[in-house]
Structures are given as C-alpha cells and as structure tokens.
Amino acid sequence: MNTGQTTGTRPRVVIVGSGFGGLFAAQRLRKAPVDVTLIAKTTHHLFQPLLYQVATGILSQGEIAPATREILRSQDNARVLLGEVTDIDLAARTVTSTVLGRTAVHSYDELIVAAGAGQSYFGNDHFADFAPGMKSIDDALELRGRIFGAFELAELATDPAEIDRLLTFVVVGAGPTGVEMAGQIAELARRTLHRDFNRIDPSSARVILLDAAPQVLPPFGELGKKAHKKLNEIGIEVQLGAMVTDVDAEGLLVKDADGPERRIRAATKIWAAGVQASPLGKQLGEQSGAAVDRAGRISVQSDLTLPGHPEVHVVGDMISLDRLPGVAQVAIQGGRFAADAIMARATGRPTAPAFHYHDKGSMATISRFSAVAQIGKLKVSGFLAWMMWLVVHLAYIVGFRSRVTTVLHWMVSFLGRGRSERVATQQQVYGRLALEELGPEFEVSKTAGGRLSADAGVDVTGRQSA
Image 1 (cartoon, rainbow, N blue to C red):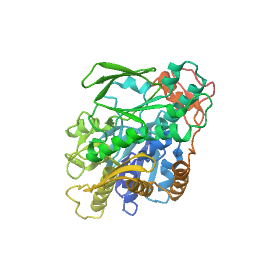
Image 2: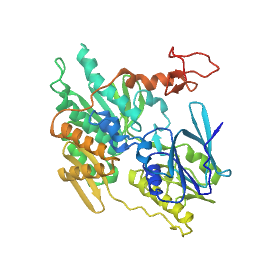
Image 3: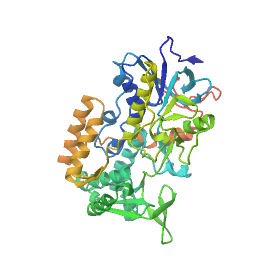
Image 4: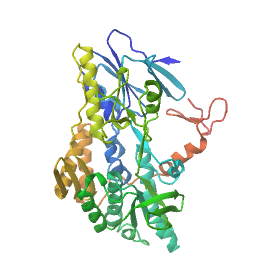
C-alpha cells in the first residue's frame, strides 16, 4: 500500500474532487500556510455547463476540460493526485483513494469534500444503456457519436419507418441542460447538416423534449413559458406531464399524466433529468450522524461543516442546506468559503459563522441568439440574454487559450453554419458499453491497454498490460 501523507508541520489539507468546488478551494489556498493535496478520479477540471456543446460538435473536450495539473502547476503548496476516493475515515482523519489497483491513504488536518453528483435514473439504472446522461466527457463524446451517427445510418436506410426512428431524438428533462441540448440538436439538423446528405432531409428530424413536470425550466417562472414558446418556434416538440417508464434500444415508453402509456420510437435518447450525489455523502452521514436525503445530499451545518467535525467541509452538489440549487456558483462560493475558514484557523483568526450564498442568477440558452436569464428581479430573454450568457460562461472558462479557441468555435457555429468538432468514432459510442460488459474486474491501464484481474489470467486486449 502506498501512502500519500504530507510531511511537515503545516496543516495538511485534502480536497476531494476537481470540479468547481474543489478547484476554486485549492486556488483560494494559494497563499495559505498549508499543504494542499487535491485528489480526483479524472485528470481534468470539467466545465460541465458546456458539455452539451461538446456533444453537438461546437466545442472540443479540451476547451471545457483543461488539465488540473496545468491549472495548479504554479501553486507551490498544492499537488494533484489521480485516484477515486473510496473511503473517508473521520475518526482516523484519513482519505483512501484507488487507481488501477493501487491504493493510497492520505492523512488530513482539514478536509474539503467536493465530489459532486452523477446522473440519476430514479432507480432505473438500466436506462443508462440506451439513454446516456450528461455528466462527463465520456458521456458527451458518446452522445456526439450517437447523434451524428444517427444521420449517417438514416442516409443508408431504405425503410421509411427506420429512417423516422433514426431521425427522432428524445431529450428527457426540461431543465437548463435538456433545453440547451434539444435546442442544439434542432439547430444541428436544420442549419448545419441540411445540405450534407443526398437521400435524407436532416431538417425533417424530430426533436422531442420530455418532462414529467408541468413547465419548461420550472425555476425560471414566466421565462420558462417564453422558453417553451421559442422551443416550439424552432420545431421542438415539448411534451410535459410525461413520465418515462421504460427505455430500450428502439425507443421509450411514456405515461402521460392524463392518458394511457404510449411508445415513442427513437434511436437517440438523452437523459438530462435528475442527479444523485456522490456515495461519499452516505459514508459521511453514517459516521457523523448527519442526515442524507434520497438524492444522496448530506445535511451540513451553516458553516458547511459536519456535526462534531469542524475540520470537515462539504461543498457543492453534495450538500443539503437552505434548499440551495445544484449549480456551479454554489460550489464555487462554497469552496472559497471553506478555504477561507481553513486559512483563518491556520493563521489564528476567527472563522465566519455561516455560509451565505450570493445568487448571481440563472441562465439557459434555447438556440442561436436566444436565451433566458434571471438575475435577481431582472428577467431577460432573447438576444440580450444570449449575449449575457456568452460573457458569463467565457468568464468562468479556465485559461486564456481555452477562451480564445472557444470564441473562435462559437463564431464558426453561431455566425456560420459549421461545427468545428464533428468527428465521432465507434470507440466513443460503444466504449462505455464494452467496459460494462467486461465487468468490475476489468482494469483499464492508461499506458498499455486493459486487463482482467490477475486471478483471471486473461488479457482481453491481446497486449501485455502494465
């Protein structure tokens, strides 16, 4: 077993997660007299609000997922470690992480848990085989392959019913992610691809936005109704009060609030409904006595710490406090608040008694040049809201180079008709399913392919694994 303990007399701060909460906390501790260890199961910081643009060919994954090491490379008191945190021991003050069969135990004096949340299928995890979520780069690349691949297969098909199935795209969830995804698929079909095929008319593609809720973008109030109208104008079928009861390769079963169950035949299904907090929340709840809700979020005290553990801070999508939304700003502000508390204790100053979230507003794009934005009492829709959306998202993309290339790609897509990132491979489409078929014993080596466990004695890649 390898240990990841930091030597020295300075407080040891361990941060779990490289998302908004974890990264901004680490950066906040830049000049603090502490040693920071950031542990994450990916090597990048993901700007999740723009994942749908990777899935629809507007941006590359590199523009929204810069390497965490690169971001923190000039921060002398911080180090970055790859590993999935599997256990947190509050009594021993240790964090255990694993990667490729290697286990490391990290001791801490202060802990920030910002492990985020994954997609929730509300107990129907088998839906994921046919309707990928939108929580990771892998998800976005798989969806890109499925979306562009559907048009290619439709060009080859001869059966009109099969062409209709291939050209039907269903997005489940009418929150910001679902609305943005549906809008971009519609734009892709009607603007980008409409002249690229000989036998099919991409603009005839059917884009359906489903939700069991009675309104599009419920938190936006009246702006949600405006968004609904705009979605209809660009050809998206919005079906509300519609609950998905089953998903398979051929389509979905839907139960309407006031009607019988019906079937929608669709090759491409995208799940943008519901989130489930990291299972680390349950661990922390069992050890601290803090309540954990059905979505896996843990109840924290007003200063974002756990009961009886002032040294443990939980931030972002994992927390249940004052009905805070699961948005990037909650994670960013929470991460900075936790870092400030750690700095205060390290320098002998009093800590702030409570975390106060400053709501900077909510935004969602609908289509090119159209969005909705709600900032306090200000409610804006249309082109002005879209421009506000552009500015805000550029401000939070990490790195000057990423901002420049993002602007260039946006110009290609929004001012022209092109998409800079249309490459999609079979590996992207089928890779996740292949790994799941191999099962939990399969280990993916980043240097020499993959292998089954040592006990199995079978190398499924035909190459010698590291």
